[in-house]
Length: 419
Length: 201
Image (tube, rainbow over all chains, first blue to last red; front, side, top):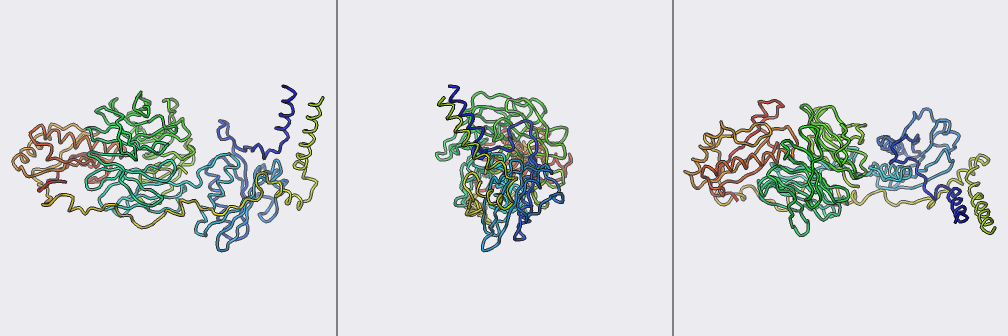
């Protein structure tokens, strides 16, 4: 056996690392060091500078890369890559690019490994000129995926509700706050609550009060039509889709006080999951689709509880604080973000799904309505720390808190898209 | 022995490949640039046709979407629609923070409402539940729902038939005032009455 093993081991050692894809950053490792990278201005058409700036900002926001001042670079964007220009600066990955503007925008990028001294990627992109930001984000995604093996959030979006000249509307913007556009506006006095995405990103579901009735409505992006998914007596508030997309979790007060139900979207069959006379709302489904975390006030004060997807085995998970609400389950599985009251303000916390390891993330102003990014590395939320409630994003360790919604828009209920 | 030779052969072959990659310092820049392109591991130069995701292609209509079924307000309330608020009798009642119990001081008010409804058998009322801004929007919708229900229950206990009462929760979404102070908050924590003649659909 050993004699067979030796040649096999040899194969693994000597095969060019490209075949056993090298991971430059292992993002699951607890001891994370930032990867020193250089993204040079893309040469050619002037828009190349804007594109490389967007890529830089994208990668910088992940907190996984370190950049030095471009003044210190020894090689200009026009010169070909030479590792001896980068190694002394400690830079390990170099990105160069060229942009050409014709009928479409064309960009070609090359990635170099300054340590192993080789090219690791060359890729060409094209897009309509007005999609320059989308193209830039695709470039960021390519680089990030090459280096970490993960897709990142660069092409994701955030949906939210805003009050716009007296009427509520649903908007979508890029995760970084750009290209904000309204996708649904409704009649003047009607209300819309937080939207939720289906796991394929093809639908948005939200509760809306119209003509004094609360219903659950859905937008299907494939045909841009709005559908009524559920309506009944009482207050109906939608929660998450299940990951398979077949069910909606929701809370309804049709039987008295708000309880949690599972709605089969196609057949409209409703299954009741909770039965108490307290308030049970805000269900969020685990990424495996087998558990639900929700808000319940049985203990006298609002706390977070968990139960199986069939309603069995309900158990409390938060014990600190007198008011814990708005849970969102991380798509990477083991943490839940929520909003808890401290003193007179609401702050954001994360907790492991077994109720341990409580971590406070915000301290300034009132911070609510958290929503995880699809890779579980970022959180979108609302904050009034700058006056009017705005949408902010941050890394899940609390770093990098910044506003992304425009200052003049009153907003709430951000929902990070799944892709 | 055979296995040993195989091992050596494999090593040699692979060493040969590896060597080409691992000692570029001897080569000229030009050669290296060329080789770098050739050494691209997976597929060589990748041509990606579009940098656009389907989502972008299809979505993003900027115009307003109307409801699938838009019902003008007047039709919702049946044939004879007269909406009015009898200020004298249908006054707001109020609640303590985070509570939905009917307060003692509001009971005489509710008695007046019940008496009025018993005397005016044709009327229907809508009870709106409201909250102050503190707490999350969803929780406040649930709390206001309980406030509206508690108000209805009390009126029913005084002899009003529940079929004449409709409920709606507005949570913190329709405040009377916006100042973050107790005098405003207590004003917002309320059940509000609207009376109709001719039926509520």
